[in-house]
Image (cartoon, rainbow, N blue to C red; front, side):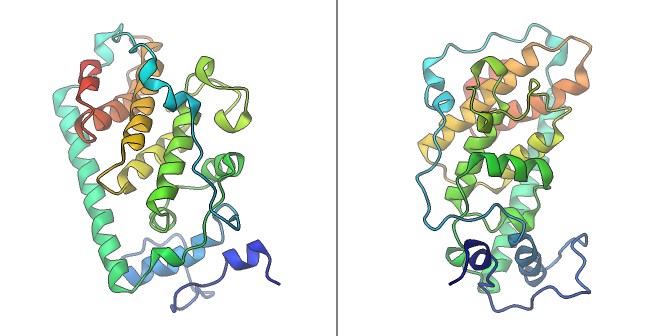
Length: 254
């Protein structure tokens, strides 16, 4: 009888397994190369469960609309310029278009995402994985929309200010207060997950996005007026949520 780990590593596609000449650092260029990278990355993803559990729900996000809006930024000098916002939105849209193109190439290679085994819903395992691994496209492209939504909810939990996090270690990114300038792994996984989300989104996903946007505003509000670099990742998140994901009321924080 196969163990969960063995079944997780089964090749679901008829494509050559990576051999000794395979270079995981080399950027894949074709659909076939992405499939090979996906087979390689599959062995590094969090262990699967035998049955997909109900999605993890964040009490923080579920109650977000019941919480008062964050105060306006105390230091206007930390706000992004319109030109900066436009550059970031353009770059993000280009990244999303690249993902769409790659998904088309995977379809041409007869890749069926439905054959992928379900991933764990253990938040602690996901936290360890995201802290230790880069958000590679070869990993993210094999995640279903449900997996991406689950991951987004976890990222939202880890982003929350300390006073709004529970004592559950799976909801805390570290013992220290979150700082996206320092915790680059969290910033990268947030951006990459947003890039890979399938549109249109369900209402509960917009709730998670608003939870993320609110946390970004609160983190930026405690910065000093000289901390321009530290404000940048929060400005990026707020910009994308307001201008790309159509949560226009967040524009007041820009």
